[in-house]
Length: 122
Image 1: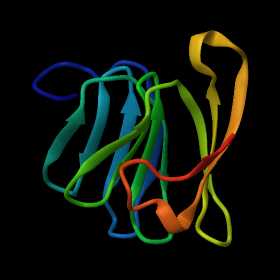
Image 2: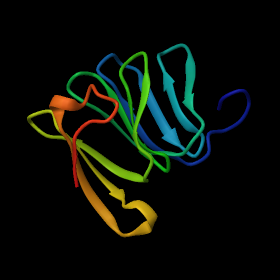
Image 3: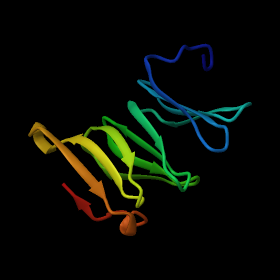
């Protein structure tokens, strides 16, 4: 419950390295730090992932997003279903291609992830 309203269809929950609980679903992204519930987005979030550096990655209808503790950055606007980090720190996603042209597996190169437009291999 938040402000007397129930969360609708929570799809994903993780606990980060700091002990914060992250909730994603139809009501966007929320973080509970043990005392305060904070809303980060209003858009559907279907997948949450924390990388080795503590960044929080989001996948959903509005694409791939990353929260670095201060800034929420969008990397793609195509639906993202899953997020994974490999041993080298590259971020892998499964997503729908532009214009509904099937699914794509994408790799975001760790060396360029700090850029707003990292190198992506599809």
